[in-house]
Every structure is written in C-alpha cells, then in structure tokens.
Image (cartoon, rainbow, N blue to C red; front, side, top):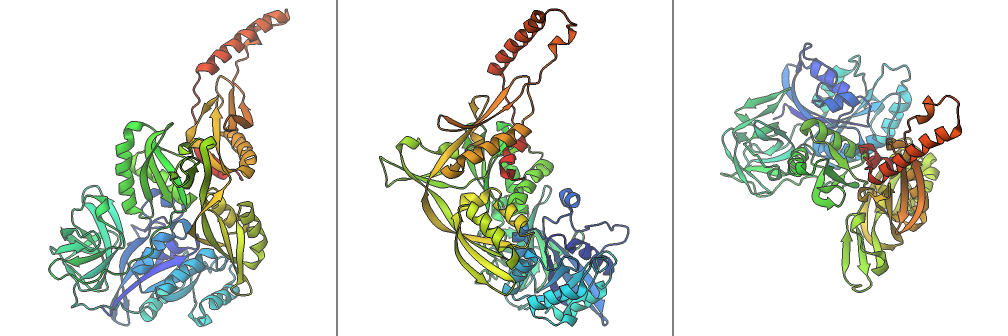
Amino acid sequence: MKNIRNFCIIAHIDHGKSTLADRLLQTTGTISDREMQDQALDDMDLERERGITIKSHAIQMTYEHDGEVYTLNLIDTPGHVDFSYEVSRSIAACEGALLIVDAAQGIEAQTISNLYLALEHDLEIIPILNKMDLPGAMPEEVTDQIVDLIGCSPDDVIPASGKTGLGVDKILEAVVERVPAPQGDPNAPLQAMIFDSVFNPFRGIIAYFRVRNGSLKKGEQVKFFNTGKTYHADEIGVLKMDLHPTKEVNTGDVGYIISGIKKAAEVKVGDTITTVANPCETAIKGFEDVKPMVFSGIYPVDTEDYEELRYSMEKLQLNDSSLVFEPESSAALGFGFRCGFLGMLHMEIIQERLEREFGMTVITTVPNVSYKAYMKKTPDEEIIVNNPSELPDPSGMEMIEEPYIKAQVITKAEYVGQIMTLCIEKRGELTNQVYLTQDRVELSFEMPMGEIVFDFYDRLKTVSRGYASFDYHPIGYKKSDLIKMDLLLNGEQVDALSALVHRSNAFELGKKICIKLKELIPRQQFEIPIQAAIGAKVIARETIKALRKDVTAKCYGGDITRKRKLLEKQKAGKKRMRQVGKVEIPQEAFLAVLKLND
C-alpha cells in the first residue's frame, strides 16, 4: 500500500490538463508512441471536437523512482463549471491533486472553486505552472498569485509544459514524494466507494470504485450499501488504457467491477460496496448531491419514441449522474421529460450525446422553474405549476409565488459594478458585500430563480471575463407579479414557447423573442405573423415575408392590367395557403430564447 498514489488533475477550462495527462502517460510508458494521440484519455468524439473534457477519466500508471516501483492512479477531470460535479467525485477518490495554472492567463475562477473543493477533502496540493513554452508566459507574476492563494513557497511550484514535456519528470517525483499513501486497514471488512459508472451494451454496467478498507476478490458476493442489492463479482480489475482484469483489488487501489447489472437505477454514484460474508458497519460519507441550475423539457420528435428516449436517458444518467429527469407532457409536443441540468453547456452536451450515442433526435423547450398558484375560491390550496401551459385561468387566481434563491458571487474587485448591474436587472436585491482580500469580493443577493435560468450564468461570465464564481441555495417562495406570455405563429399558439414572465419585463422580452424567431424560422410560400400575447392582447409582432415567384417576369411592356391580374391571382393563392399552411419550427428556435442578448 505504501507504493500507491491516488491523485487527480484540477484546473480552470483550457489550462492544459488533458495535454499534461498525455505526457504523464507517455513518460511512464503506459501508452506506446504508436497508440498516442492528443487528448488520449478523452474517449468521446464530442470531447475531441470541442477540445474540452466532459467526463472524468481514471487510469493506472507504473513509475520507477529510487529503485522502487510505484502504482499511480490518475484521474483527469473537466475544467468547465458545468461539469464541476465530475470534479467533486474525482476528488473524493484521491489523496492528492495537481493544481495546474496557465502561465499566460494566471489563476481563474474555476481554479479557485476546484481548489476549495480539494482543500475541503484535505488533499495534498501540488501547484504546477503549465504552458511555460508560450511567448506570453509570465512565470514570476503567476507564481506569486499561486503563493498568495495556497500559501506554499515559490520553490514548490513546478514549471512545466504539456506540449514540450518540460517538467514532467519533476511532477512524477513530486507525486511520489508529496502525495501521501492511502490510509486504510487491509484486514478490515471491505469498504469501497463508487465514484463513476459506465454502461457497456455487452457487459451491463461497469462501476468504478476506490477501496478504502479491506480487499475485494474475484467471485465474491458483494452488496451495495444504499440499494441493499447483492451481486456476484464476475470480473474485477484495474483501469489501464483498457480494463485490466486481476484476481484481487486491495486497499487504496482504484478498480472496476462487472457483475451483470442491467438496470441503471441499481447503481448509485457515491454508494459503498461491501461483501455479503463480512459486511462493513457504515457507508463511506459520499459527496454532495447535485444541484440542477436549469430545468427544461426534452421531447422526442416522434411521439412513438418516448420509451426509447426513457431508455436512452437512463443509460446517459449512468455516465453522467448530474442529469436529473422526471416524466411530463405537453399539448404541442406530447410525452417527454422535464430535466434538470447544471448549466447551458451541460444542456447542449446532453442533447448532442442523445443524438450521437443513441440516435435520438429531441426537441428541447424553453428552460423554466416551478411556481405555486393560489385560487380565489380555495386560497389555502396551492397548485404547483411546472409548465407555463399548466397555469390556471388568471381571472380566478388570487396570487402566484415564485422560488427565490440566495446567490453568492465571488469576483475580482474591478468587476463589482457590472455584476451588481446585472443582478439588479435580473430583479436581485443586494444583501451583503464582503472583501475577502484586497482584490476579491463576495456579493450576496436574493433573487428569483426564474431569472438565473435564462442567460444569467453566461452573462455573469462575460461581464467578469470568467473571473466570477457563482453558487446558490433556495430560500423558499415569494409572491410575485407574474403573467403568462404566449407566442402565436400564424395565429396558432405554440405552448412549448410560452413563458411566465414578470409584468415589467413582458413587452421588452416579447419584442426580443419575436425578432429572434423572425431570424430563425425559414421563409415559407406564405406570410407568417409572429405575435407575443398576454391573454387576448398582442404586445409584439414581427412578420416573415413570403417567398414569391416573379409572376410578372414574362410581361414585356403592355397594359398594367395584365400584370395586376397575375399579381391578384398570386395574392389569392398565398391567402389560401396561409389558411392551411403549417409552420415547422426549427430546433434552434426553441433554444434561441436563451440567447436573446447575443
């Protein structure tokens, strides 16, 4: 056990985590030069295309230092804030973390939030200054920033470059020397924590775990603590570039177990595995529950695919446990699911993965939150409104309440003005402002949750140049002056585009949505009016002009009545078309509402 080291790589997005992981794999000979490719651990096409890591990836390396052979278990984590749940799970399975900072960009928001996560779990932090080969690198300034943040000595910071391979040997030595060996009792009952799981169509569910105490042998009867289910350990092993079967996984090791589990609901990430013969008494304290930021409906394009979509979502949830969903139905779109996501990028990625991995083309509705409505006849009875189309008739309604949150924004002092303006624009009230250091401020707001769902998060990142980190927790419901805004296309209401908005924002929002839809809906053979309405009152309108054939092209000169006759004939045809015409709404139009400020 003393020769095992478990560590993860944490950093802000695009600071070079995956590239550095590639060099570590090459240096330790885990991957041959023939198999080597950029972002070697990222196994999704989507990750390669976008150049981002979406899933955490665990891999085992062997490294020789001072004549002794060490087993290094590395977990490469995502940098984007929408996947911070992946990071929190990886941290729970490690004793050390490589904190990577870009020498050209310095410390950024996600660096700090990931660092705090690691410190809460008492991880040994090894600071690394990456991208030293860039002409714009500022090693002295950024080293000072790291020293201020962690309180280490400047000599502890390792200069490195993922591209050229500079400093990789030093990093491996630092891991061996500084990261503590895992603690645990090899003779105690088995206690292992599941930190990830994937679905394999041939072998069922593969759970990745980290052994805290005891050991697991092949063929043993195991029990999952929280679900209480028992299974047979058909195959166990360690994670190399591929799964590597072994007879036994010991204390401190990271491994996988295949036990023929077919149902997604039976594996919970954060659960504890123990043996049936000699069970442990308590479960390992897992990590925090996921907090969805954005709720949205996902519907199959063809209603018959509903069951298939459910199956796909369950499989996807295994691979991404931060996805939360429950069934719902809509008048325009039929049966579907109401899903909770960690942010807009997460929502986009889920939609794309459903399409690529499961061949499901889906429609995503405008994101929203749940409201409570009270009627005049029964003022004590609350009606939960999950969807704007479920809102009761406003004439018989006493009041409507919306969920409020307490939001904390940590940012650099220079961006306080813009962030306050943004929060006040989103109907937030400033409750507190604390200077953590000379340059870092914590702002506390109370604001409606419905306002952060749209584009709050993206705009917060924009006004603070990515330096603001945001956290929130719900504080209950408050009465609000909300109205339902409907969108009519060619005189027909589209319930998937309805939204509950504050009365003061309705006119401006209605106008913006109409303009955006005008850009996105393709022109038809007939004229299409787009209207935003509150009840029977239209508050905004845009018109998509008809595509017209030049019917007068064949008339050379001659009397105007010949041309008029042809135009009148065309006009009558367009009018008839408009009465029977159906408008197809492209998928982008549903998401356009989110990007009104672009």
